[in-house]
Image 1 (cartoon, each protein chain N blue to C red):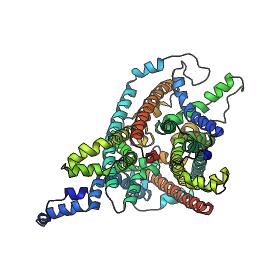
Image 2: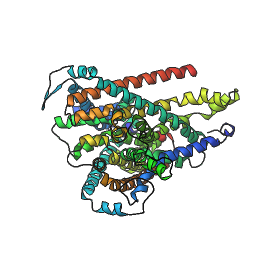
Image 3: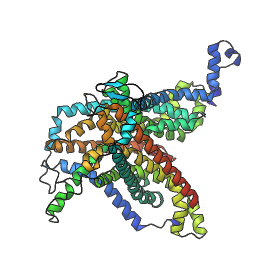
Image 4: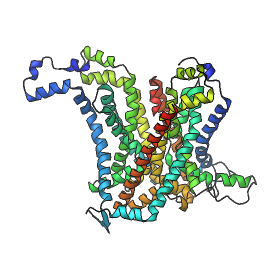
Length: 272
Length: 310
């Protein structure tokens, strides 16, 4: 970047706007944790009094635990499988000159621009026709579909960011392709792999629109939460659960972003 | 070159049998190796996306016959969909709500993306992470938060009553299309900031200096250099918000009320309570085609406009 201070005189108004905008992003979400500590069935000011009751109730809520366990299973499987496909795909498009590469990448990224309701209902039709039926497996398949594009994007920037000659040096020194991958390529793309896993897990863990159609008798956590919204008496429980989820996923994502962006200087990764 | 290092030691060996021949071809052809590495990913994406979408298209030409599905080809569903006014009403409303959301989100996001790209010098990473975080948090919970805020005895009403500003809760703030637009604008904010930020960050700063040296003031410089160069980001942001929001059924259900029912609610109903999957498929395909056409037209018009300015 060239020194161009006279072009970029600090603009107070813009700074104030930026802070206001961040407030607009964060404050609505903060009402969930705020009211989760309120000793009242209603979400209304004034706050009655501080309580941890709703968090205590969560410990004995067996259906919620089951839903949490389902979401963890789906999230972990979807993250692992998507990341493996992401590694293969990202290595293929960054390491080889492929004819028709652009349309192929566009095709893989397609789920990002198809409304999820259409992906969800289409998969619903598919699993019914091939006799798979609705289960955690159908939800996992749906989540893999929307996670692979994210995984590819994260890993492509990682593969582009490292020096290809390292792999060549390893090959010249007599390592075969398999050991070159494990001893050179993998350690270098590892931060990308880790952040891809974390991002995919979070996407799957929070995903509702597709899971709504693809869940059978075992709900994932968002489907469970949605079913609870109908009952006013369960609202505080939902708030406590929501606050917990938000806290954990903010932490996980901040970690993933930090790992990813620290390892990649190119800046092009800011794309996703 | 990796390929050479892995090639068989002598070419004469390759002449031996078919398998060796294939191996030699395989190792020498970059495209073949690349595509075989890509094959699992492509296959899964095809199996989980193209096949289901193909089935949906097929379903849209079939009809529901009580419990079974009649698989004779017919345009009946499409005729029904276009003759009954409900499809048109819901579709226009959905497009209107999504369009307003997209416009508002992009307009609000542009200044902050500009601020972070051009004015933040230290702690840029912190700003980027702060802007990105909500992007990954639960969509359902973000939407639900607005129901708490706008609700009959929600945050706004209860605090206004508590402060003595109003006596009765305001009823017009929840369960209408405006509430949907507000909620979606918040829920999709991060999706607009990121692409715009990236396109602004990429702009070569010397172009701005050149414009200044040639006598452009801040406004002219923005309109003639920065804005046109950031348009790819604006277009990407618009599409990334417009397309999915047309297919959202959670937000209308939670904050939209009866006047805020959107096309996705109707589709969901066909796959749920109405149990008319072929009709649901017809509605899905029709809205997808319509949204795609509008998106392409938008991209085309924006590109043409940019050419004229630049």
